[in-house]
Amino acid sequence: SQHSGQVRDFTLLDILNALGDTTNDEIRFPDGNKEDVFNLSSFQDLSSGGGEISQMPAATGTKLVNEALPFINGQQTIVLGFEPVSLCMVFLNGLKLRQGIDYNKDGRSINFLTALRTTANQTDLLEALYDIPA
Image (tube, rainbow, N blue to C red; front, top):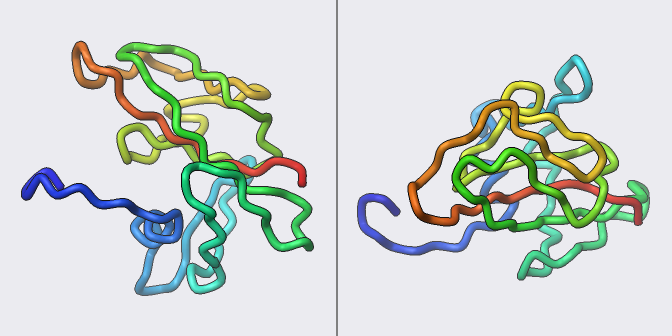
């Protein structure tokens, strides 16, 4: 916390609820040139902790990857460990970046459209949440 200095771990479900509209029970994800809306109450916490790959329900045919990467001030490209199938959300120090506005995705590469400036002389944390084939 910036106010108390307290450290807290957040689950992916915590983050989705923070980013979504809890009053209307929905969260919007980009899907090409449009947005798709999902009910927050339909999400389940499937994390196994430690940034591990978690098995999604068999019907989806994908696994969810939560990858944390060091981000150096002004870095232009990050290479992910796997190539995302469709869903790809990118966070820098907890702030959600917008695909097509803050970055573009090209295979495993996340290319930032402008040089992102963060804390001087410090490595920051970039987190990517995406799906891969099961």
